[in-house]
Structures are given as C-alpha cells and as structure tokens.
Image (cartoon, rainbow, N blue to C red):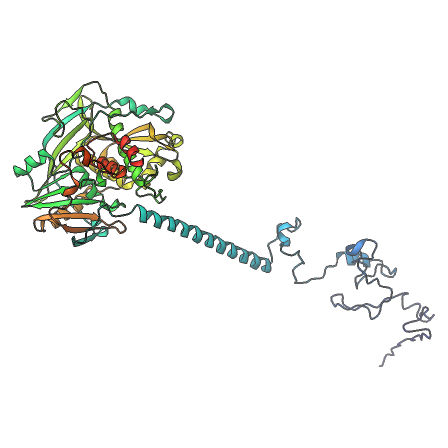
Amino acid sequence: MVIGFEVGAVPFNPDGWGPPDATVTPTTTSTLPLNVPYAPFSRSEKLGRIADFTRNLNPGSGQGGGRKSAASDSVFDFTADDSFPSAADNDSTFRLVDGKPPPRPKFVPKWRFNQHHRSQLPQRRDEEVEAKKREAEKERARRDRLYFLNRSNQNQQRREAAVFKSSVEIQPEWNMLDQIPFSTFTKLSFSVPEPEDMILCGGLEFYDKSFDRITPKAERRLERFKNRNFFKVTATDDPVIRRLASEDKATVFATDNILATLMCATRSVYSWDIVVQRVGNKLFFDKRDGSQLDLLSVHETSQEPLPEAKDDINSAYSLSVEAAYINQNFSQQVLFRDGNKVSFDEPNPFANEGEEVASMAYRYRRWKLDDDTCLVARCEVQSVVEVNKQRSFLTLNALNEFDPKYSGVDWRQKLETQRGAVLATELKNNANKLAKWTAQALLANADMMKLGYVSRVHPRDHFNHVILAVVGYKPRDFASQINLNTSNMWGIVKSIVDLCMKLNEGKYVLVKDPSKPQVRIYEVPADAFENDYVEEPLPEEEQVQPPEENAENTEANGVANDVEDKEMGAQA
C-alpha cells in the first residue's frame, strides 16, 4: 500500500530572492505554524541560517553591550518567535560541551585570579608554563649561587696567599726526607699507662670563685699585669729538662705546648714548625725562636676570611697577639692576689731572685711509650682551688670576641640564654685552639679547665676588654664533647717519635704544609736557627730594628708580658 506524500506549494516571490511576505496559504494554515525560522534538526550541529538579513552582525552595537547581545545573536535563538514559548528557558539551561580551555588574559593564569574557579586546578598548559617558570627560577638561583661562590673563592684564595704561608722559610739546602698526610694520623691509636710526676716547680695562687658568677650584664673590666713575667722556654733551654736528660731519666723530651700541637695536628690549618734534635739516643722537640707556637691563633678554622693587611687590628697576626695578651692577663685576674700561694718542691726555674712572676706551676711528668722509650714533658697549670679540703689544679684560658659580624653570634646577647650555641660557634671557628687547650689540660692532669669569654669594649678598640663569663669543664668530659680521642692523640705522638728515632744524629724540622693537610720532615744544618736566638742583650747601637720585626720577635719569645705595648709598636 503506497501512502502519498504532499510536498505542498512553494510560493514564488516576484519581487526578489527568498520567500514572499505572505507565504501561508489557506491549505497550510492548519498544519504549519506562522513565522517558522530555519533551524538544524540537532542542536549539537553548528549550522546557522542560510541567509539572515535581519541579524545584527556587530557584537558591540547591541543595547546591552557585546556580552549581553551574545544570547540574541546565537544561531539557536528562538526567543523572538511566539511559536516557541519555552525556547528561552531551554536556551538558558543549554550548555555546549567543548574540550577547549576557557580564554585567559595574557601572562596571567585565569585559575589563579578568578574567584569563581579558585578551587579548580590549572589546565595542563598552565602547568607546563608554571613548570617552565620554576625551572627558570632555579637556573637563576643557581647562577647567583655560583657567582657568590666564585667571589668567596676569590676572597679565600687571597686569604690563603696572605695568611696561609709557611711558618718557616724553606731553604734550598734543606733536604726533605718524608711527608706524612693527615689521613694516616686519623687511623692511629696507642694507649699509654698512667704517667708519674718527676718534679713539681713554681707556685700557684688560689682561684677566685666570684668570677664564676659573671654575666654579660655584670661584666668586669680586664686588667693589665705589666709587672708579672711570663716564660715561654723551649725544651733544650729548660734547666730541669737538661738535668733529667743528663741523669738518663728519659729518651724523649718536650713541652706540653709542642705535644699538644702534634696531638691536634689534624685540626690545624695554619702552618707551624717544630725543631727535632737527635743527640745520641735522645730526642728533643723544640720550638724555634720567633715561632708562632707561643701565640694563639684566632678564627683558624673559620670560613670567614680575615683582613690581609698585617697592621689591621683584625688580621690574623694582630688577633694572635691580642689573644696572647688577653690570655695572660685573664689567667692572673681571676686569682686571689693576697700573697697566699701554694709553693712546691722547687721554685720557678726561669725566674730570677726577687722577680715577680705569674702564677704558674710546672709539672715534669714521664710517660712510658715502650720498653726502651720514655717521654718527659713539662706541663703547666695556672691555679689551684680547694674543694672538700682537697686541692685541685686548674688551667685558665680565654676565648676572645673581636667582632660579632665575623662569628655571627653576639656574645652579649647569647651567652646567658644560648651558651651552647656560643661554644658551638667557637668550636667551629677555633677547633684547633680549643683542642690544644684540652690536650694540655689532660697532659698536666688538671682537675678543671676554666674558659673565659672576653670581648672588646668596642669592635674597633683592641686595647680595652671586658670579661663576660667564665665556665668550667672537666678535661676528659670536654675532650669527649669535642670528639678528641686520647688514644689517637698518643698514636700520633708515638708514630712521630718512632719515625724520628730512626733518623741519624742531627737537626730536623717538622713543618706543617701551609696549603695541604700534611707534615713534611726536613733535614737542616746543625747551625740552623741559631742566628735567631740572642742569649745576651745586644749593644744599644745594634738593637735598632724595624718596629714590626722587633715586635714579632719579642712577642714570640714570650719572656715579657707587655704584649699590648709590643702590638702598638708593631702597628706604629
């Protein structure tokens, strides 16, 4: 059965192109609505009208602006047609699904500033842009870090060239026998039995316990002791050591300062040298006249560069002189100077009769290294204190603050509340000096070591100082705190003694390399360094010397304690 299909009448427009104004005939009135616009069958198809001469193509000419006229310009807008009363409601709820990201302003991610989409994550393209920005920022930070690192390396190189020079000038006729890297020292270990006291000389004054209560808010001015003499005598010039050597009491002789330098060699940065004399079957460890061993290093292990000029008050040499001056005066100020002294078997072996000397006791102690080798060392203690009716020996040393900007820690603000942080900073900047003080206290068998914190009154005034605090430590506890191993200390000494015992009779020099962590052994002529030492005062016309050289030699000898005047002479 075939059903007919009526196409309908197609009106003809004689006036132009398109349908005429009256297109509806009476036959189609009942079946076709009036004013039906052309529209696609599916709203998802982006098909517009074939021709629309009434549509406003200018988006900005609408009454409500471009964004308000967008709805009326839509290809699916049927709101003007009364035949579709629900078209406006349908169009208001209709959304075209599209995978493209919404448009955003240039250089500004829309998800970052849009309040309505703040909870949304950025699109993948935004993530890539942000990742590139992060990489560029990392690269910029890396370039800045390398730039500042290169600048610091340049400062460090200049500092090494100025300060890290050899402590002794290596002569061409010297013969280098061996060089020992510090890496071999760290693996050594040796246990020594308890030592025995041979002779005890000198006299000690009692410690004033009121200095333990000093705080930065109740500081005390550091006094000067110009009338008291301090002695820094090497082993071969010590009359007691000469007597013990003539009596064959030992085969190796040294001082506690020299032994501490060897024991803590792996922590040293600056160059140092020790003279070794092999006489028969005996070995003497001496210091050169003018050696830096009599001075105290400051900021030796710090990474912050010090000024290069020698006459600068913050240069390495000026700070060493200042530290020696502070250490000597501090060790005498914290005592009761009422004439009450503890005297020992023999008087001070270096003082003349009637001469006022500093409070100092010398303990000559002997250690047995093996069946054929015994070592005698002169050890120093500076004070004594009575605890439970028992006398305890003390060593007195002072740390000095010269400028807080170099250490980064202001003692006046941190000592009361963060004393541990101050000590940790000093252990970082002066590791070698603190280790040597601890080793000397262990060698002397001191019951307590007192550390004073002394600072300048003003960072630019290196003559006036104040005591901010005094703290006491037991040497063995402090050694474990700073990771100082006594077995390793004696292992270093034992290895160097065994090495020197194999040498022929003569004079040798141990020199710490100024730029590498190693020690070199040189064979030197028998008359080496003898011109530096002056036994008797020279005639007055021969004493004229450059001020800096004169100050350096006299300070290194340590016979006089007027370090301040010498420093002024060095800077004149």
